[in-house]
Image (cartoon, rainbow, N blue to C red; front, side):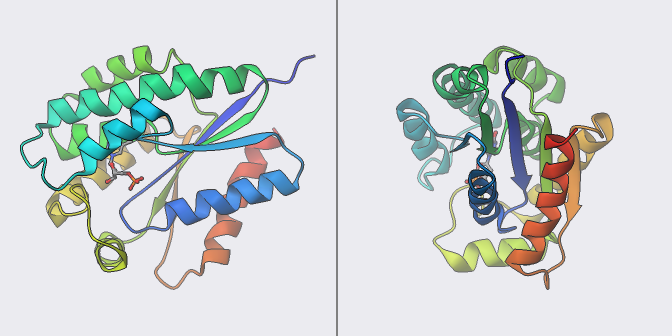
Length: 211
Ligand code: TMP
């Protein structure tokens, strides 16, 4: 029987180490001889990268939450059509740094855009492609934001107030309650090393890959 591809997505609050972790996961799966592809949102295509620039540019202070929603969705539609759907069809594992859950959490819960509308847009933009597993790295917000802001020049999203990020976190926890078998929250404590977090992620991934 032809092996079906699998989409796995990683989410997390700002500064949680998500991008480091998804790269480690990619290397781990490569070593296990899996056909795996790593991409990210917003971006991952030429058009998506141009949209990412607009979204994260500190000069674009006037972007409304609805405009943000549509731009994130446009980047996602392009990524699914160009990259994700064809690779899944070839039986690959696709790892994606964020997914439409981020739009529900950030623009829906953070920006007060109707979450049901976002979910119906996402259905169209993703052509119904669903992750087999989505992991939310849940590091205490104040720690993550401090890290994000001290590591590099904070982008437009990272600069938003703590209250906004608290609502975003509530959004992710809401998704976890709606879809507990797909969307799982991993508690990260500040003293967890990169290796410890990697081990926690591996346990979850192996459970899905071996099921
Ligand atoms: P990153 O931190 O994973 O690179 O993502 C860039 C920022 O974009 C981050 O602050 C989360 C935000 N974002 C949204 O607000 N909505 C979305 O749909 C996505 C994919 C990201």
